[in-house]
Length: 144
Image (tube, rainbow, N blue to C red; front, side, top):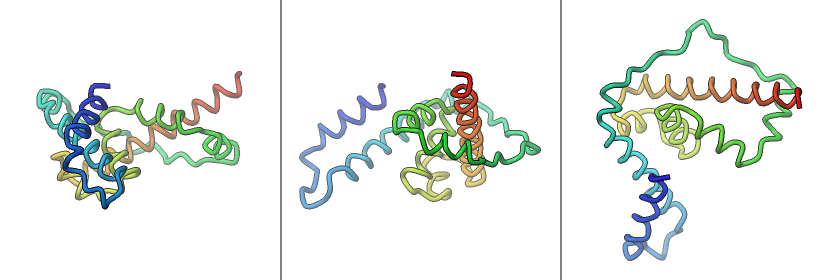
């Protein structure tokens, strides 16, 4: 919540710098992403004390069948946000920057101060976790 408040505060404080000839949402989104990155970088102790544990390489890619596709298609925006925000911080940052914001791995690596390979691993890990959560949601819906 603090991140969102910081982003809104920066947007409000910098409204005079906004070029009215351009679209507002991309400008606000850029400020929000940069605020998130700044906050992430400021957590130096977190970065120094956290080790990346790679996911099992023998873990197979999960394929969605027709039932799983139906679950994925039935997800609304709030469900998707909840799933994404439940991801670990690094995986979430890389996933959002790559999938939602359209950044390349090289750009993400520069912004998050990590290697391009790590960026790819974090994205893969995020996708695996999301698949697992979606399959769990499907199992839960079967029970209910």
